Length: 271
Image (cartoon, rainbow, N blue to C red; front, side, top):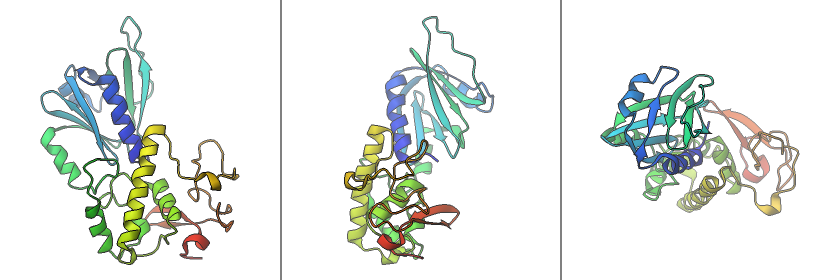
């Protein structure tokens, strides 16, 4: 599932591509036909993101709310001089056609039109987003510091912190040598502050570069997990391979329905 940096990057791209101009919106698949008709031809005012949620704001107070889920993706294509759009390929939920560029959305978990005030209802279910300037980390700390759930589970809870997915969760805990099974009540405020600052920095790099970058240069030793389709990581998807720091085999288990990766020597936890 795309993590928060991907949605913020999409928001910036869509702002550049479509912002402050009318956009033709359709639903070749048909499942978003009524929503597309509500915004078709309206001026695209801006795009914004909160965690894993993307919002397209149109004149008239209409907002297209998108959550990509596991399979959602946007693909972009140039509009030829004659303005003729290519035939849709696959199940295109939403097609946007602007000046010189178009984009197709396939497979999202959510694609709906809501009113501007309803954004607050979506956001009310989410924790602070490390990529937003208005984020209040104290909200996340209060939820973590009072919970006996494991920190590994809490970091993935979008109501605690919005935008963190499995890669950032596993990598952040490794970078701070924190046992992923420790309860939130056992995390100190200094540990949380350090993790929050690191997460803000890491996710901003992700927005700029379009990929997750977490491995420090001194630990970048060309491990065998460097294969196409895999992120360059310390522990994520490296089960059984040697830790980049101590060479202990990386472990994995399921935690609240998601795979967790950690180094039992550097971080402690279950052996």
